[in-house]
Length: 276
Length: 257
Image (cartoon, rainbow over all chains, first blue to last red; front, side, top):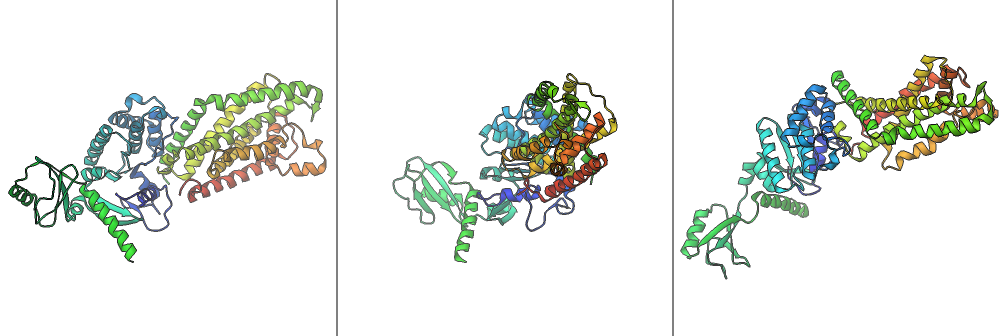
């Protein structure tokens, strides 16, 4: 679930997980309505909120054990699950420490262990990697991919569009409390009509090369930006550059493709609102 | 409602609450023991010896049941209000709110924690009292049942305070401006028969008077009020306060946006 700050991502998650009272609409989780089958609906969900909401004075293992108890798991099973997930999230060695002594990344991992202890069908993560360093973020991605492969559905909100593009099969873009796009990731990316590539050249450019069929811009460092529009291909671009005697050393996307699409959708919506 | 699930959830909450009380025993157990020891020394021993008899008992014996009840009331209330408000403030109340445990289970678990702390501190204060006076329990069932019901009432009241509190100041307002005056004026240190008739009638509007006197009746066999009335008041308060707690939890007052 993508959206700018204040778009309604956390509110939507709050409603799904019963932390926010809804004013309209219906929510069903695996067929269980939160209006008339709330306990069953809640049993299906594991929630990792955006803000740290741990009892910082409580021991790490007790936090996970208590959560298991709130879901009705007996003490023996709770201990087994607690050990399983604390080990998987590399917190087992810190199990007897108070949560306040953990680093920020560890606290986020503890919240994931807590959310998984009852092995929910649906895991909801609200910006799980915000403020987490790259190494931990990558290991969390790997962990989430593994539990997703094992059959757990994951709803993820994130500001890291790379995270969404690499982890998610389906994307919903939300703005102003409205879903403005909801489709498989591949379909969403396919909607992107053009891409901008940045080319590092063997000899930096001083002026735009005469590529008539492509829109180009020269950057201050001599790199060249080329827009590939609908119906155009990279092969055609390289052929045109070769014709001009320009040698390309490397190539990269100017911006994340999803980010471009996201910005365009949000901007289009704003324009439509202004027009209306 | 899934009874098995809720039974496990309540047991988990009670265990957590007891561990919390034991973890911070310097804040939860030691202060009431020290305070009550001072009461026994100053009011019971030093001043009490000059007061003489009260309702046919020496002053130390007379105030002992009231002081025990006072410690049960303040600790039951204080435990629930600080624990549940702390969970709200630290947002780990969400651990319970997202889980399938019922709102009744959340209330019962916290109230049980408050009752256990109240009874534990009450037992400790009784042990302290025995250093200063002899207590022969006249009516064991009344003694135990009154102290248990009173602890439930004040645990429920603490839960409501915690739900309504928005900042830490809000959890000390009721104990300071309501609970303490009602307790001191609830016949802990004197018999209301000493008061003019008008103030006797005013005192009868104070529910704590009934709890203190019923408990004193259980231990000493003397009371200013009818024991049946005390039971009725306690039961009405329990039903009323539990209903208010449940209503507020179901509505999400103070805990859900």
